[in-house]
Figure 1 (cartoon, one colour):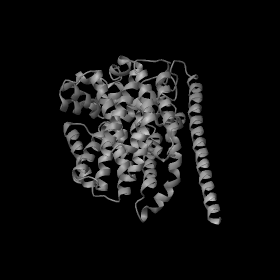
Figure 2: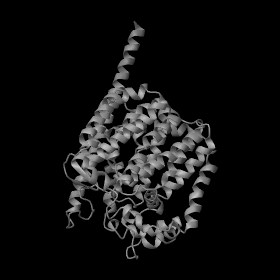
Figure 3: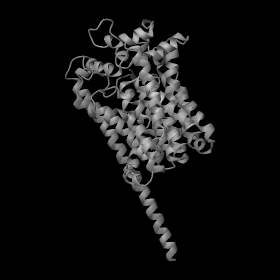
Figure 4: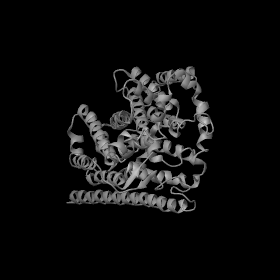
Length: 468
C-alpha cells in the first residue's frame, strides 16, 4: 500500500510539474507577444513625429520592413496544403523515417514550404522580381566585366557621393555577395527567377545542416523532434526570397561541417574541417556581420572538447582572404567604409533607442512562438551545462541549451553594435535558424505548437507585403 501511495504521489508531482512548465511556457509566449505589440504601437507613434509614409523609422509597418496589405495568391493553396501535411504527418515521419531519408525529406519539405509562401505574392512580385529592384544585387551584375578590376575598385563606390555609387545592398556587403549573382549570370542562370531559386534552395538547406549539427552534438532524438519545426519555420517568409536566406544556408553548412569534424562523426574529419573553413570564409565575404559566427563555432568546439579542426578551418578561411586581397579588396577597408555609408542613409535617422529592443521584437515573428517557449525551457539546463563543462561535455538538452545560447549571443552582439537598425527579420536569419532547435524541448505532444508556427507564417505572409 505504501509503495502504491508513493507511486501515486510521484505521478501527481510529475503531472504538476508538467502543468507548471506549460504555464511558464504560456507566460513566456505572452511576454513575447506583448513585446511585439509594444514595438508596433511605439513604432507607429514614433513614425507620426516625422512626415512621410515611412516616418523617421523608414518602415511602412514597424518594427518590420513591410506594408499592411491583406492578400492571397497562387501560393496560398500550396502553403495551406504543406502546412497541414507537416502538422499532421511531420512528427510521426520524423520519428519513423530512417536518418538518411529524414534529412533530405526535411530539406525538400522546407523548400516546398518556402516556395509556396513566396508564391503567395505571385510569381513576379513574390519571386522573379524580388532581387531585381533598384536596391538589389542584380542591378549591378552587368557592370562587372573584369573581376580583378571590380575588386580593386569596389570600396571606392560605397560612400554616398562616390562616382557610380553601388546600390544599397551591394554597398552594404562585401563583394562576394554580388559576385555570386555575377557567377550565376555567367553560367547562363541570369535574371531574377534563377537568383530566387538559388536563394531558396541554399537558404532552405539550413534545415538539413541544423539537423546534422543537433544530432552530432545533442543526440538523434532531439534532432528528430526539432525536424518538423525546422521545416515549418516562420523564417521561410524571408528566406523566400532574400539573399540573406542564401547567407544563412552557407553559414549553417559551415557550422554543420565543423561539428562533424570536431565530434569525429565523419570518416574524413580533415576534409570536413577544410570545408567548414571554406564556407566560413565565404560567409565573411558575403556579409560583414557574419564575423560573429565565431561565437557559435567556438561553442561547437567547446561542446566537442576538440580544437583539432582549427588548423584546417583557418586554412580554408585564409584561402578566401588571399583570393580577395590579391584581387584588390581588403576586408577591413570595406567594413569601415560601409560603417560611414550606413550612417549616411536611413541608419542616420533611425533611433537606436527604439531598435535596440524592437529588433528583438521582430524576431518573435521570425522564429515563432514555439521557439520562444523552447528558449524558456532551454534556460533551465543552461547553467548546469555550463558549470559542468569543466568536468565533461554536456550532452542532450544541456548541449542544445549551450548551442541555442550561443546563437542568442550572436544576435545580441549584432543588436548592440548599432549596425542592425531595422530589417532584422531577414538580416538575422543566419542567427535565427539556430534558435529553432529549442522547439525540440517542448512536450512530445506538440502538434499545437507546430500548428501555431505554420499559422503565424501564413498570417504574416497574407496580411503583410514584406520587402527587403
